[in-house]
Length: 344
Ligand SMILES: Cc1cc2nc3c(=O)[nH]c(=O)nc-3n(C[C@H](O)[C@H](O)[C@H](O)COP(=O)(O)O)c2cc1C
Image (cartoon, rainbow, N blue to C red; front, side, top):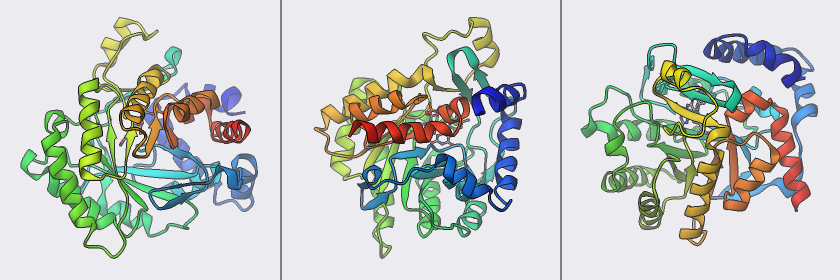
């Protein structure tokens, strides 16, 4: 029904407007008695064989919603009824910020891709916390954190720490997002020495709490092998809990979209089917180079059960979807979980 009816209708409209519209639609329909159970009966698979235990957390199944969809943590309770095993909120920054000027979100229909330069638009830490206080505890919630665009390089760590400390009681794991291509400041966030310093600072803060939360690093799919070697060393040296591979890409090769269309769209991070192989290669490289010594969450271009199995085969312990959720609809989650069960 999604691909035949809703998607053709939704795709007639501006992508960002439709994003907000579907949020309101899911939020309001979920208030109607019987609808949450209907969604659950359609989309949720409960099976012990799908459960995964990773960095001390028990996931109901290995299919998660990637960061950027529920940036302000307003819909995770309702989205739990679509069959996800975990949901990552954010990227949250200390202060709310508008992000880049609109238009900043574009569909590449023929490529089954999206280009976005949202620029960490979010309502800020306080707003996210007030939403997270409404957590009905159905799922594992990840907190993806970043820095405000206006923050000076010498204060980056302060921003991450502010988010980390304030969100600590409310999320199950953390993701240091250092790979968004839309917020500038890339050089520093790609520098191994700085990342070491950032991770150490966040880990120190983690140790001040009674219970420590897992900390993961989210990386770009555009890193070369030398940079990936550095990531492997970094994870080993810092004892980081895991890596999310990958964020969106700045690469525009092998797209069906015309040069003119791409020029018209301009800068931004590419997601969806066109980055599938790139992100799978990154997962495979990390997994092999590290002798599978740390957990990897695989994300990037999963539009089918097979795409997810490919990521798992490459070394991913869990997977996440974003663009595939937009193009294929909520049944994708169930399809992936069913295929995982079949592959056992
Ligand atoms: C519109 C949009 C906004 C996103 N915002 C964020 C974000 O705020 N933080 C983040 O870590 N990743 C963000 N992402 C990246 C996704 O979490 C994911 O890593 C990437 O899109 C690749 O997965 P996909 O091909 O399944 O979409 C965003 C992606 C899209 C399409």
